Image (cartoon, rainbow, N blue to C red; front, side):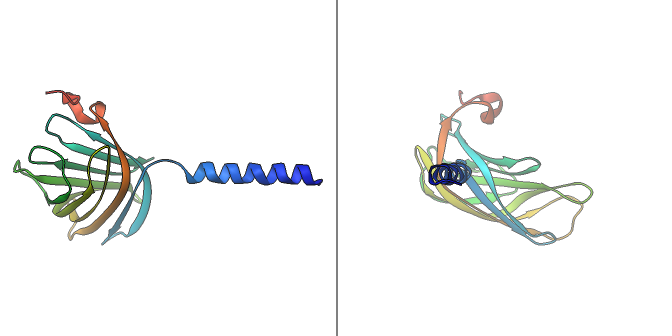
Amino acid sequence: MNGVLARRCAAGVVATCCGACSRGPTVTVRWAGLDTASVSLPARATWCAPGGPLVLIAESNDTGFGMVLYPADRLVPGSYPVTGAGTKVPRGAAAVRWPGKSAMNDYSAIEGTITLERAGAQVSGALEANATTPGTPGTLRVTARFAGLPVASGGADCGARGGVD
C-alpha cells in the first residue's frame, strides 16, 4: 500500500471512530439487586414550562431510563427527594426498564435522591434510589449520572401539556 493510500485509510478510521465517540448526550445508569447491569444510553431533557417538570428520557432499543423532577417553582441546583407517589413539591420520580430472559423488567423508584448540580440551558446531576416492581420481592438499587445534557423547551415529552399551561 502506498503512503497516500495508507494516510487516507488511517484518516478514515479516525473519522469513523470519532463519529462513534461523539454520539451525543448520554445518561449512565446502573442497577444492582436481583439483576445487575450498567448502560450508557442516548438521552434528552425537556423543561415543561412554566413551572416544570423537567423530564429526562434515556433509551436505546428496549432498555430505558426516565426521570421527572418537579421543582417548587423553578429549576435550581439542589437535592430533590424521590418518592414513589404524591403531589408534594419539590420531588422527583424515576424508572428503569430492560429486557429479561422471558419478560421486560420494569422498576419504579420508591425512595432516594436526585441531586441537580447544574440547571439552565444544560443540566447535570445524579440519581440514587431504591426501586421495586410488582410481584418481585426486594428492591433494586438504581444510580444514574448525567452531565451537560441540553434542555429543550416543551414538546411531546411533556405529554398533553406540550409545555404550555
